[in-house]
Length: 71
Image (cartoon, rainbow, N blue to C red; front, side, top):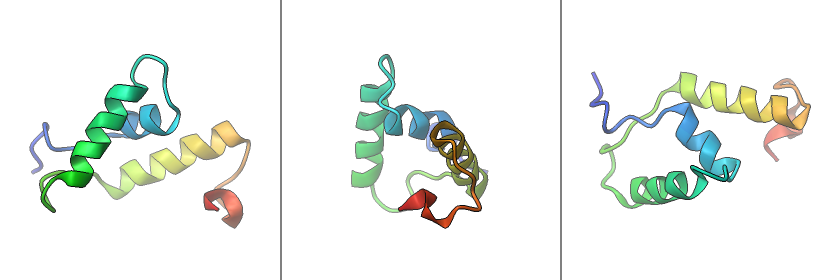
């Protein structure tokens, strides 16, 4: 089981990618810390990545079948 303090959930990525007015900067700082941390210190799941793609696709009015979504 992953330590809850080390798990990065969907909301952190969405706040960071969407530049949320209240939480975007805090999320960006956390993502930066994650990038600088030793490998394996933080974790997420494939379900989290899928949820992020679903949310971004919905906001963009796109579908995950559209291969250009991630370009």
